[in-house]
Length: 141
Image (cartoon, rainbow, N blue to C red; front, side):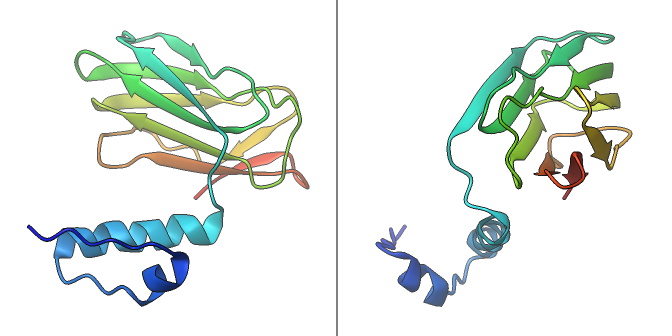
């Protein structure tokens, strides 16, 4: 296995991977970078939620990553979006899970709204939301 060092962004732009998996990761990186460089992320782990539970994302003034870690696939889960302390245009919210959730309900906090409400979530499809301060809306990307 050959290790590749990419010391700066200009070299990254000209890097063309040959391996399919590396290419997929590279394309994902480019897509996320084009949206926004995600820094100052608040991580929250929801360990062993059961069907019917509600998870409230802790409020913060940063981007958010909720990692749901159920012991087994679960039938239903409610997620309450964070109440933004100092809303910023473009704030990101990422929701991932280690097991499938058959029915997911997303609830907004305060005066915010959510655009894009998937019926379920699985391990291969994380949810990525971006906040618009103009509309007080979390947009599913």
